[in-house]
Image (tube, rainbow, N blue to C red; front, side, top):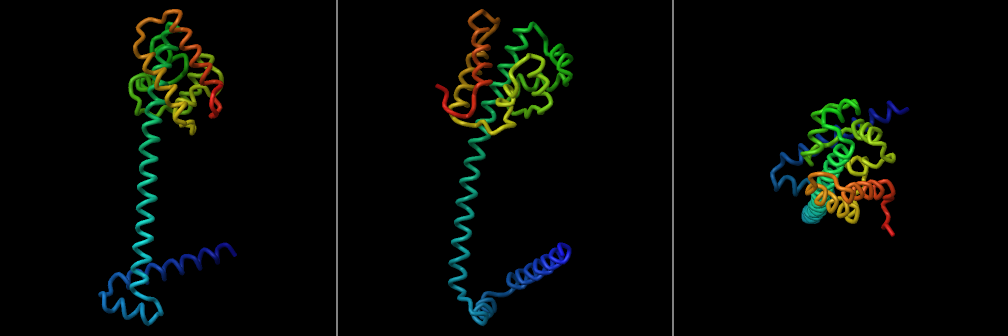
Length: 195
């Protein structure tokens, strides 16, 4: 039964494709005469086509704006991830190479996460880093862009942290407290407004 339906679909699709090719190859006068013979107003069809095209362009523009906004948010999250990784690594007194060995990941990915916010960290690396630094589960996932934690409030908090963290040279007690408070924020963020 399913095979028969697929065959009918392919046959219908083939007829539709052939019809479109014939229609596109016709000159304007022949096309208008053919449509009229079929009971379709060429003017009404043209207006309907224009309306459909305008709606498609509106949807595309809206989707493009949302994609651009999401790219900016993901970049901000990745900046926060890189800054947090640097601070966690320094807090533990580890080099990038030591983190890579202990987490069983490639050192080039650690370096890229710390320095390039366009890098998409692998889910395995995120998981391994959470375990290495004994972070609450899914803490770093929220910064990786793997999940859809892209609210403005969350992104702003991450951006603030990243800006503060990049200015730190050595971790003072206050800076260690900042890291701990940020990890707590990440582990408790549920996507709803924090109280």
